[in-house]
Length: 335
Image (tube, rainbow, N blue to C red; front, top):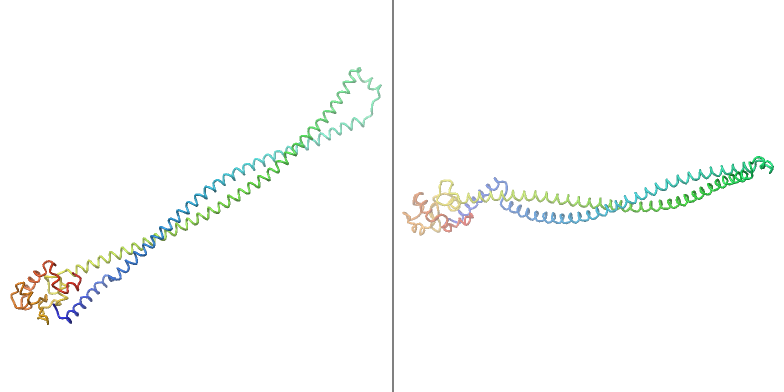
């Protein structure tokens, strides 16, 4: 309803006002929408990364649980092997002590037997008359001879028993020594396996902890990104609400107005303009036919008072149902 050059000027002025309003809010609509879109994309990427890391963390925990079970079994085997080795070493130490005692006893028995034999065979042999005279009869003689024989046999038997016991102790010591070496090897092998499993457990724990830390970092970034995106959405909603309020507000210079000030500003700049090349005039840039159809009292809108123009413009506006009667309604985003 307004001349094209004037309309362009008004639109530019309106855009300038919108830019000022956006700058006052600190961000433009396009910038906010771009930030929101980028935030949603980053949220999706971070969410996928966090979910993937969580799956890896669960897998790592399962691996760690298996290794911990194997490590517990290996530790139990090591404890049993160390207990067997300790028992064998205790038995071996006792057997070595026994062997040492038997060796000393054998040496003592041999020494005593040697001294006894030496005393008997190096002393002067009594003649038969002396033996007979000193004996109280033949029976006493035989008893003395038998006693000496029993003593000699007993000493000899003691030596033989000690020799046998020493040999038995030697054999047992030999067996225990071999058993100790075998159990020492077994213990070392089990300990080596347990140490390897302990290293695997430490590595699995490190992997799980690293995955947990990475996931926590992704979740923290996701939280920050979501907060930033929500803040941008809140700012955008405020901006759009302020724009919608400004667009539908009837308050403006020279008002109040019967239709939103943004349309008035775009159509006439709030001036009671004479007819343009198409014939539209007045504050609301009404065409003569439209003006007459509404019951205007003058031949053209601009000739009527502002109060009459307001009344008939409100009738044409019809609470927004007649917004399409003004081209500027679409230009300012009302329709």
